[in-house]
Length: 251
Ligand SMILES: Nc1ncnc2c1ncn2[C@@H]1O[C@H](COP(=O)(O)OP(=O)(O)OP(=O)(O)O)[C@@H](O)[C@H]1O
Ligand SMILES: [Mg+2]
Image 1 (spheres, rainbow, N blue to C red):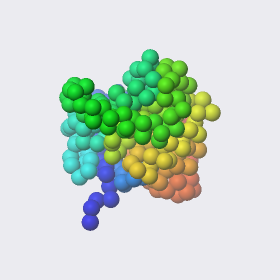
Image 2: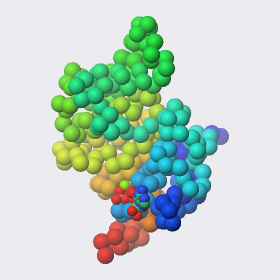
Image 3: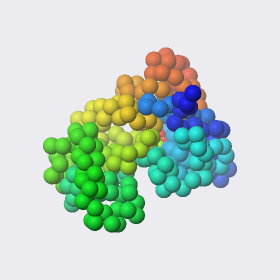
Image 4: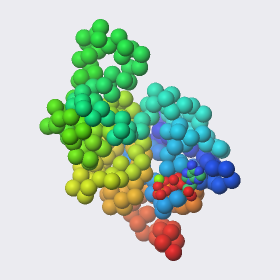
């Protein structure tokens, strides 16, 4: 039987000097699910995220992606093997349209071959087709000709996710995709992530409990670098330890 997990960590640890931010974390993300990581401020979520994306080298443990060890692989190599993180707004071409941004992201996935892209009409067609498919999925087709810089903040963040999708990833990593978004834009992002969970694996770090509870298949709660508990939304909601972890933060 094939492994039901796309991503696993084994005793993954990250220390900053003498301080351990991620402490022997064992995480298992299944195929085609939305898996959220929550926890109070400073729990180690972003540190974990950096280890997974290759932004930081873990100080202990292993990371397996599609049954292959990637612990020491570069961020770039991880993207190449099918792991994508959402781009930052600063990576969007503000003066280019939504459609053009997505087409560039689609071209980018071909690496060096994109350099000779102008020679190949069929490749151009493929890139455009992928861009249009992603644009449809984002619900931004009606904004195809609008410059990225003229979109609302929320729409720009949606477009960032789309840029990652143009790499045809198997796993999408999102660290607080709704941070800084207006309340009116949040349902759009929430719906998109829930939809993406049907075709991709999504690892979501998110503070907004309403979002996490409504779209997650699995929730891992971190506290002080450790996994406190893991389960389905209803189980997490009912667990007193989760409340205590958050209350402890306030106290
Ligand atoms: N570069 C760093 N150097 C030293 N300590 C760090 C560094 N980055 C984070 N930390 C510490 O590691 C701990 C975990 O931080 P991290 O940012 O991973 O938490 P988080 O769960 O993402 O928090 P938040 O919910 O606020 O985003 C915190 O105590 C933080 O102060
Ligand atoms: Mg964080």
